Length: 182
Image (spheres, rainbow, N blue to C red):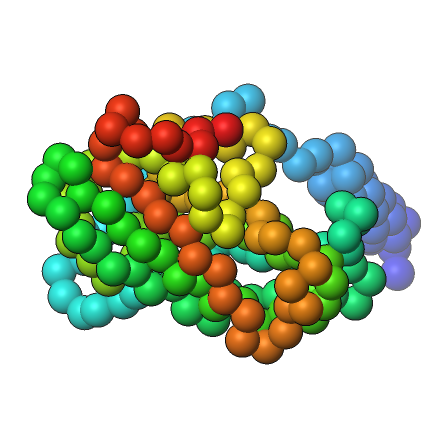
């Protein structure tokens, strides 16, 4: 081998090493980037068929008589039914709510949607009120403006069990009777 060929091979090896190490350094210098903004995206669709039911229960909790959550408590609303009488704008509804709970001698704290009880859909909720002598006491902070959603508690010491019920009334025109609006 001649000296020229050795020098040429050494130059080629040196060039190759520079390319490999230079590429590695360049790749190592690249960092992840992130956009300086986040565009919100929205999607919607129109339901054109099918059937479904709005759940009646928004929530219910088995409570001790002293107002604390019952340890190991369970509660579900098994049904909400209503009867309606009178004519608009002075109709009344009587609601029966059935609970499956182990609240025992405590009470049930609940939130339900009264619009799903199978009666006329044109009931005027904006003027409606909870009649004050029923078995549902509105929770602190609840007002009639929240109707058709009712957040309330049941009486205490009813021996709450698997098919316990309460009854209360709602009037369409709260100015026509005594109501409990929180």
